[in-house]
Figure 1 (cartoon, rainbow, N blue to C red):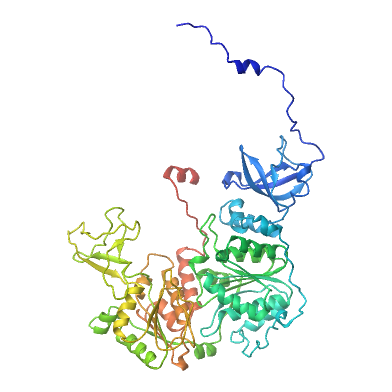
Figure 2: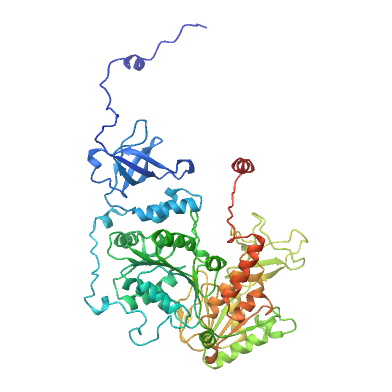
Length: 624
């Protein structure tokens, strides 16, 4: 074998020829520097990076605008946080690759909020800004947004004065609360009160929020109101429109479409409107002169963001209220322990209904301890104890609708072996089996896995070998089927899953709904039946009791008042604390008691806790 060195390739020899000098990258003294938030999402890169602004991008790369920069060899998005004349970086700086738009989408207040949120939830600022700033639509951005006139020129532009009757008659929606009128006066004067509000049953919570928004508008300040879902947003939109007139606010929600949502968001950013209603992403809306942030039903799981760093809307609005010096209103029919903690620490004041108003408006609540029915044939046949069946029968005879709340959707969402009672599991992925394809009049149905969806027509128990199945949980469809046999000739409606009713007429009919899908009825329900209460309370969760009270109160609030014959029947032991909170209609008392127990056990919200998920070696390294 020859040991001589190989002949160099031809192209290597040519590389020795002199070439034209490359463009100098030395920063010129007159070029400004843009400090950019780079959208990389890595925790160790969560800081500002300096880039030189070429002359061609000088007018476009303004503070708050979108830019493109080269980072680690690739082009990534970014936002200009600030412009400075001289960089503190001692090395060589790169140039901005492009200025995407001159629209300053990142306001200083939203940038400060994003930094506070990232620090509070141990996330990165770029992750927060992806939640706060919607994707760009060039055609929408190029269109001109004309501001709404601030001077009332037509009756539709006029704001209804707070404390006076609404158009068409009606009472002041806050007069039934101890500190309600004082809250509106403070908002009208431009102050920043902070309140935790438990709403009365039989009143429109949307009208009360609309009155608070109108009070902030009277003071010339903006407002943000966040609700759990689109159904609540429709109700709130109608109430605010009735108060302020059309064109005075915008609704931000995902179902409006990307282009329309960006158009509405730009209207807020450019100052055309300063009142925003929406779901959880609306909490970041760039409202100018913010005077009020409000959230309805803060215990709903929909207020928890599903993307990193997973902020909760209530905590986010509390943080924004502090940074902006704005009023905060946390409301719901129930009270969460976090809201009770805000009251206990003195950060907020409780606004609760007067007892005389509560007695006049709340329905009568009956607790039934024998949920299984025992020897009661009606309970076995129709899942209704005798008391509940009679209450529903009397309401239907009087021409009033009946609401039945069940905790699960579907037909038979839980199955077990009919012989040894072991939970039925899928042979492919070990997921739970259920019957979700059943329909009224078509009992049975092939069981299938609730995880992978594989049918299990020939299932056999791995423990005893039996092939029989029994239901461990009954869903809304099966409940409607059983109630149809219990009340022949009565229309039965279901509201759950993908088919949710927003409103039902009055009259003699039965509505079976899952929590959060209960429709309002004309005149209210004569009876509200809360079934399977034991399964709600038996959840392996710290918030099982709190969540049960919230679900029950939200459904019970749709019933008529006790003087009008409204009744609520809950199939749970009346001695239990959550049931007592429902019977006495005392959500704040239950929340205070729950807070005291958590304080003694050092559980949230009295202490801060964090969850770290990962490989054991990585967790040990982090802890170390």
